[in-house]
Image (cartoon, rainbow, N blue to C red; front, side):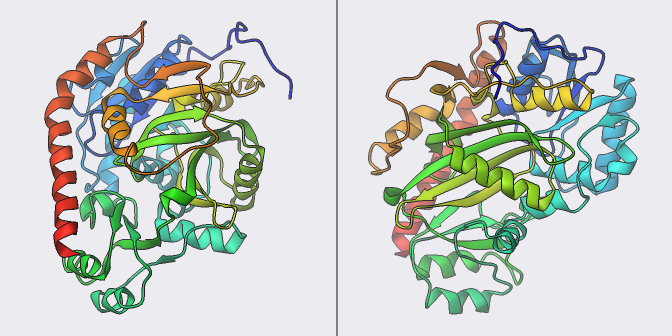
Length: 419
């Protein structure tokens, strides 16, 4: 691959704005801030959907305008589509859509015909993003195409869970199964580790007659290593930007969003991801979570996010390209400069990495592929040229941060009592 100089300016089309789209209430989202900065630094006008006027994204100096549009993900699709079209009319020219959650990615794909006149986005098969965002749909695609993934059960009744609890190997992991349903009726708050049969049955009593969960094999953290693949694929499912990295810490521990990660070359994993994308015919930005299982020496695909991940700014090529810039360049007819990923680069999410560090010190989890020293650091919130989002985050973080820690402590205490 030819390597371009980082000093070479990226020839972005500054007449085509970007619109950061989110569905749901999560104002402390550093991925949206990263996308605003990424395009804004190129001189591209950036707009964003925000919950209110005081979110970190709304305070960025690179945001041309924020559209206050609080959503929950429980709205009817036609309401969400009309809301997007209304924002498009206010912008007044076609914009590149950049979804930050699975619900937004699914909505855009399933209503492409209605949105096409006002927005630019990858032309993907209508049903594919929903299937990829679904834990069951992804598992079925992995089986179909021979991609390793953890063993899983998709229960349809409480009785099935009771029967499974009597023979299952614990611990195991419970996750919400479908996009949108996790907003309307979440079975668990997030990826949840279940220690034994009594705990599983106790949780399942609250899941109703049709449990919207996946019960997944737990890959022991002492025998595993977490990897990330981010990429942008064009309309022919060809990767125009491809990156691999290793996750050092996440929050909640071992199950939540990335808190600390490094860029590490992994040609084998990149090839696996590219082959899978080619087989299913996806195009656009992807964020994949893999776990390397040392017991059998295989990489297993845990999650497929058919949109940019919150930690996408971990990755940038020597040509200055990340996945958001690659999508904007490609959809506006510009060439995506070739370049190598910058190995050793580190990403730190300031508000969650400290508690994650304390938790991981007692966990026994190691990341042998993480470099001993970073070649550079990208902070999720703090940036010299755009400091307001950092202080806005701090102002809004205290209350939800304390509440989240309290909920985590209560869930662990309840699990201990059940066992």
